Image (tube, rainbow, N blue to C red):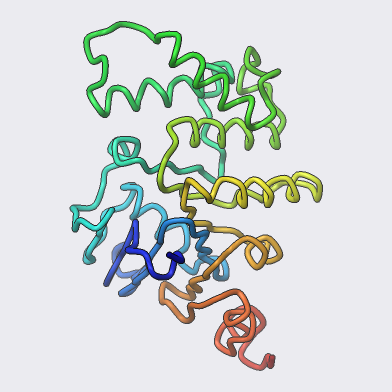
Length: 255
C-alpha cells in the first residue's frame, strides 16, 4: 500500500491561530501519512513556525481539529509529545548547554520513561537506557562527542546531537525545523541522505528554507503565505504553481 492510500498519522483541519489582532494562521489543513516527508514552505512570516508551535503545544489555537493516529484529540502540550511518539527539533537547536552531549540525549530517554510511567519508581538510568543514548549518538556520527559539554559544540555538531536526541525515542512522527539552516554543502548532503533513511520508520514534517532540500526530499509540500494555505502538491506541482512563484518572487513573476 502506498503512503497516499494509508490513513494519516497526523491530520489537522481548520487550524486558526491569532495573536491579538494578527491572524497568524487561518483555516489550515494538512495530513502526514506513514513513510512520508511533507514540507511546509513559505516566505518569512508565512506562519510556518507558528504551525509547528501549534502542533507541539507551544501556542494554543483559537480553532481547529487535531487527529493523531486516527483519533481526534485535544491539542497536545509540549510535555506530552514524547508520550505520543512525536519529536521535534528547534531552529535554535535547544540543547541543555550545561549538560554533556550524552546527558542531553539520555534526558530524552528518561523523559520517555516518565511519560509512559515505565519504571516510575526506579531511580536513575539502567544499562538499556545508556545503550540507547549511545547508539543514537553513534547513528549521528557524534559518539566521540559524548563527554563534551553542549556549550562547546560547533553549530553543525549541535544539530547532529539535537537530531540524536529527537530520534532516540524512535518516534513515529518527527517535526524537523530548518535542519539544513547554517550548514555547509557537505553537511546538507548528509542531512538529505539522513532524511531519506529515517523516513522508513519515522514520518517527517519539515520546515526548511533551502528549496533544493525541500524539492529533493519531500513527497508532498504545503505552501503558506501570510498565514494562509496557498498551494499543496508534489514538488513538481508546487514548483510550477503561479501562486507560489508570485509569493516568492513577487506578483509580476511568471513561471
